[in-house]
Each structure stands twice: as C-alpha cells, then as structure tokens.
Image 1 (cartoon, one colour):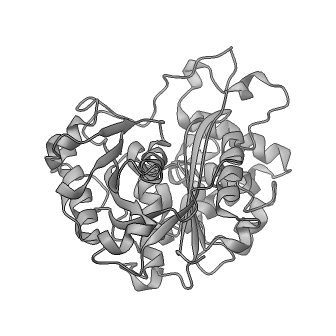
Image 2 (cartoon, rainbow, N blue to C red; image 1 turned 180 degrees about the vertical axis):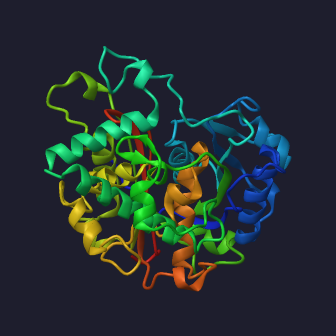
Image 3 (cartoon, helix red, strand yellow; image 1 turned 90 degrees about the horizontal axis):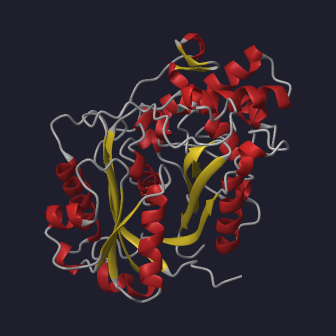
Amino acid sequence: MAESIRDKVAIIGMGCPAWGERWEADIFDLITEACCEALDDAGVERNQIEAAWVAYYINDNATTGLVVAQTLQLQQIPITRVENACGSGSEAIRGAALGLASKQYDLVLALGFEKQKDAGFPGLVTSGAPGKVYPMYAAEQGAAPGRYAMAATAYFRKYGLSREEGKVTLAKISVKSHRNGARNPRAHLRREITLEQAVNAPIIAWPLGLFDCCGVTDGAAAAIMCRTEDVKKFAAKHPHDYVTIKGFGIAASPGWGKEREDYDFTYWDATEAAAKQAYAQAGIRNPRKELSLAEVHDCFSIAELIGVESMGICQYGHGKEDVDSGAWEQEGEIPVNISGGLKSFGHPIGASGCREVYEFYTQFQSRAEEPSRQLRDVKLGLAHNQGGFPGQFVCGITITGAPDV
C-alpha cells in the first residue's frame, strides 16, 4: 500500500455560514462568508493562502477557479476547480491535503459552494443516465427520487421487510435527522417532525415521501489547512484543538451495476471501496466502535440506511435493528448525522462534503452552538459524500480526528 496521509495534514480553521434560501446572496457572497469565517477561525490572512481547491457543480455563473480569485482577490495563485458530482466537496479537501503532503504548498484553502435556489435547479436532473433499457436508468424514470425509491423496494424485498415495516424504518431515519437539525442553527430545515407525519407525507416516489428527500438549498463551507508540522506556525487561534486528516477514500464505480444480474442495488459498491481505503489509511479496524460520529450522505433516507451498511458501520440487512434500537441517535452507539444531515441542511452539491467535515471539526472543539447537540469524548469522525446514482457512484470518504489518536 502507498504511504498513508494519516496525521500529515491539519485543518486549522473552518467556516460554514447558515444554509438555506439565500435569496439576498449570490455565489460571491457565499464564497466570501465561508472563507472569511474560515480565515478568521484559523487566524491567518487571505494573502497567506498559496493554493486553493474549489468544488461546485452548477456552473452557469462560474466555470473555473477564477470566481474564487475574483471574490477573494487572491493574487496569481493556483486555484483548481474539482467536480465529482455530489462527491465534489470531498474531492476539494483531498486535493488540498495532497497539495500540502507533497510539500508544494504550506497553507491552502478547500472550498465548496453552490447557489441553487435561484439557479433554476429543481433537484430532479434526468440527464447523465445512459445505459441499456432498464427501469433504474431509463430517462423517463431517471430522476434521483425514482432511482433511490427502487433501491428501497429492492432492500425491503431482500431483507424481508413488509411495505409497512420498510416505510416506518425510513420514516424513523427522517424523524431522527429532523430532530438533530432542529437544534442546529446552520441548518436549512430546522423543524422536528413526528413519525406519523413522515409516514403519511405526500409520496414523491414510493416508498419515499416528502420527508424522505433532502431539499434544494444555498450553502458554502471552507477549510484552511496546513501540514501538521506547521500548525504552531499558522494556527494562531486554535494551536491545540486542530484536527488532522486520518484517511481518505475515493472510489469511482465503473457503472456495471446496471449490467450485472448479481447486483441488486441494495449496497453501494463505491462506498464499500472508499471506506476500505479510508479505514486502511486511518488504521481503523472496527468503525462502529472506533468512530465517534458519522456524517452520511443522506440525500434520501434510504441512502443513509444503505450507506451506513456499505461502510461496515452496521451489518448488511441489520439497519432496521439499529434504527429501532436508536443506535444512530445522539446517545446511541454511533451517532449518524448529528448535524441533521443533508435532510436538514439541504444539498448544495459542491458544498456538502466540506460541510460534513465541518460538523466533526466543531464537535471535536466542543463548539456546537446549541449545547444539547454537543457530543462527548469526540475522537474520530467520518464524512461520507457520494454522487451519481445506485449502481454507479463516485464516493469520497474523509476521516478526521484528534492529532493524538
């Protein structure tokens, strides 16, 4: 195996302005808010930044890193735009970390942003679904809710869940995410819901109802990073409570799921592969026991269920047991989406991966703005970020933790 990134790179500052319907703001405002907060948090000046990696997906207003150079007035430095669909945010942090580890730069910026509410993005993209005639991929059924809904029904069938059992299991996941998000001042949808509301909500694509689906929103998140050996040099505000990168996993599926008769859409193969990479680098053998929290890409409730299983945090087919027992709740065995997840934050595509890392960063520093949301004894956190559709994902996993873990 190639040399691990473990503990070579530190995150010394982060910013994540409140996400939501930011009609009053444009992309330049979102970039400014996230980066200024991150720079202030780190205690460094923008002219100290030597390189940047930037993630965004909707590109009507920007196609390169120029938009960041213009907004922050960064002078003639390399700015790289990365785009891995919904997994773009993870890729920005990974690129920044590798730039530091190679010693090409000493202080860098990783940024994800997206302005969706006034960009005409409905969240029901049907493009990019080529392939043979197959219900999961046919253009007329190719929107994301339909694809994930078919994964849900396949999951119910494989593990013997009745329609009612499956529906309630997914609803419990949504109730949990809304409960967490209601206490997070940076989340878009800060509203608790009841199990009855989740079960009886209008159907988007059966079994997925309104509360099983994340929303379209505006948001940005940024990280200031340096090599761990340089923390004392750069981290003016947090010289003792910075976090380090423990491992990355990035996996792009060849997309053969739709062609294989043995693939049943009840596991995310790219997530499996990325998790193995990240665990190997981080030295994690039992993620369920060793992780303090997991931020999982829950664009739909079924995505969280299958994602947790695909990362080995829960055995395949045992997700319902975990949901029923409260194992993924704040006081449970492994808190999942304590931030409220994509379900409460919404999913500004390029920003979600950075925002997930931000959750661990603040939890580790005991800076959760709502005290009741603060976890205890936080050591290792996992951020899972994936784009594509069941059977063909690109997945990024970032594991961060205390420097001495």
